[in-house]
Length: 137
Image 1 (cartoon, rainbow, N blue to C red):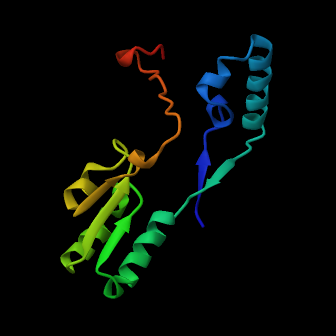
Image 2 (image 1 turned 180 degrees about the horizontal axis):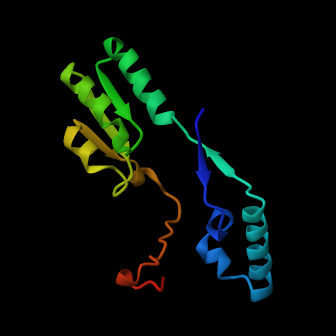
């Protein structure tokens, strides 16, 4: 398993929106903690997930057993294995959420299902922090 070293800063521990809720005293303590971690040369690593690689291997290993593949993902990292399956005559279905599926996958698919259409709960729309879209970042 591979590990990715992380930068030690406020963003490692808190989302930007959360940080803005803290007063100066709390932010100072957070920064003191971060400074101490850096001074001690503490390294924080995150395991690298290889789930997309594992899915690709499973798809290719089972290619002769199936006539179609339905992928519940919008990850463009899976494009190459899907292209290989397409060359072998397999149908490709992509199940994802509108706006979250890579364009390359749309180009190779035979069928697309917008999983968001099946959601019946309350929809919450997050305002962009980008000033170009009315945010104040």
